[in-house]
Image (cartoon, rainbow, N blue to C red; front, side, top):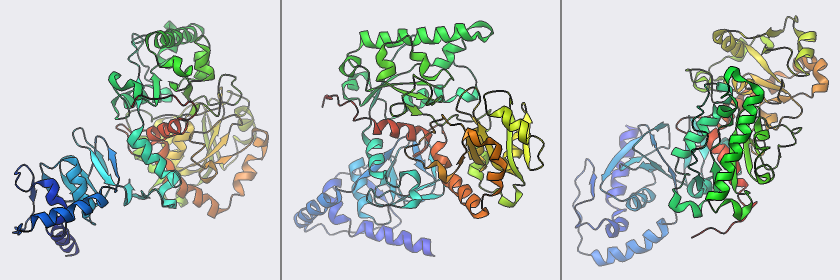
Length: 504
């Protein structure tokens, strides 16, 4: 009954009060625009001039209501009515008038909620920027002046995030160098090709005709493909090929396009998800290391080629195998905290790096610990993630570990033991809310530290993981506030480092 009253209210508001505003834009005599409703209302248009005068004033006021545009997504259900043949500006006017309208899609359906969202190849959505946005069941305030803890890591950045969504422009260089080397199916480095594909298909990517207007220029290098292109995965030969291919690509960009030389590469960026990281740029133009922004997994303070305040640490991997682990685990949703019987868990090579040998020497046979030498089946691994309170993410040969996202997806509180690691989204996400960072020098005290974590504090971190995991998760197609958008937002925050005049 409540739903029927709401629908009736929407229809009445649309057919009476809004008429004063939309009559000017619809041009009632034009039959190309038709509103489908279950009611038939006759309207007296004898005072059309007066109505038009009033509509001008009200339309000017309503024009100030901003809308968030999201490409290739729709809102499932929550339809209230459909408007045929109306332009997007007319739809915005209608939605602005209706207090019940939260959003509308490009096919004319008016929505009373902003979620749940679904991927759609032929539909885009427009969300009224004065309502609460629902993302995967979590309400996120969308008012740029509202500070709401439910907004997650964007509570204090909503205005800037909206601006990025609407105005960020990136030109992807159409470089064919290295395309004969195919991407490798390795989940640890899978974000590399995924990011290139997502960016190229997104509304952020601009055509060659608009390249002068771009905020950033992307060099679509694929260091993992180059590094693993050699027979028997020859490491030395592969690294040489990767550095030479990157050099050739950058030289092509410098000598074939005018954009690099305007800033010596300061408004350029590239990606390398392989452990090589920024070292792939060693043979390239010096500006690739000193000025261009690198998107890397190997975000390590001790690497001389990595610049922490310039380069960006990637959310480490998009998932393993055919199963979507983020959907499977959902940040630990549905897992009863009482079912997490084990104190800590790790599975992997025990000899890599300085931390792991100490872990196994001291804690392998403790009853509360589950430290596995080598690898276990996917089923066993997922079971351990679900059954453990703390999942260890020690450094190995490199500072980063794909285990970080495995733990987060299943609500197992990460314990990061890697002094040199620059964590993903570090300027947006307070990692103390969802994880523990233990200095490598305190490995011997690890069990004592974890056993003395108060139960309330553990529950608070688990709830925070459930709230924030979406920001670290890669989706295809992308979703608002996910890893793809979070990486672009960090890039957006660096846009004023090099102020290059753009063509208007």
